[in-house]
Image (cartoon, rainbow, N blue to C red; front, side):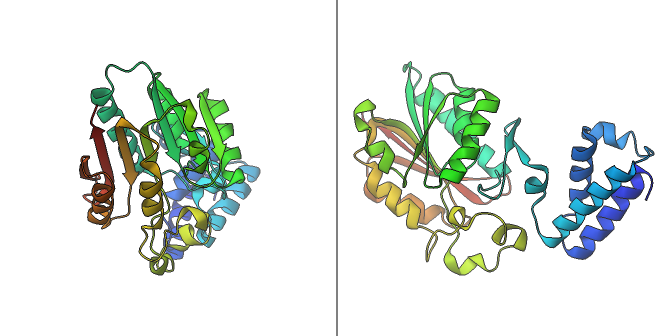
Length: 289
């Protein structure tokens, strides 16, 4: 293994045999060579140093064992920005970008006359949702909550690196928000909570279940525990005009929609499908001014 193309071919074969994503080798090599994809592909005959080869082989083998590529390189791209990630936070997914897009589109229509919009992100993890919303709309006053201090540390690092103004709060779901309710009610409540049913955890890829934090994955017997708690606790904290935005697991749309409708009979509740055709988001709009 001397050239870039040889390294890529070796990694692809190795990872295929290990049952991993064959394209991960390219991501790792781009990271170690600090190259964009186009630059890497135009330098296929570039000679790798011994040190570069050693580090690359080490990381490819680590991914072969199951460690997510994002934890090996230390970041993931989300909504055009780079977010630091480690084993204390869930790796942001492309589907969650669609949740953010859905919030931005609806907020523009719902709150066109508001100068300041109170946004709360529950279970913020890396801070990807909260930070992106804060950066995309200057009217958003964003608070983000997580039960794990370790996750909040990563989220704070990301907020500083991306120069986002987000208030981070430590606590269980809406508890820290209820404690400061005098500061104003919630206009937008967003959450991508743990939603995988307990029985399904063991069927997940080892890359997910063995390395990503279990507290960010397991959602109880039917995967709906956190939605029930959020929906039960949020009613007193929402403004009369409010947007609720949940990411959900495939197949949970109708159940989460029903939970929201029972709690907020006057809300317009919509299940939205992602780019892969799976029910992935539930939006609730309260408009009783």
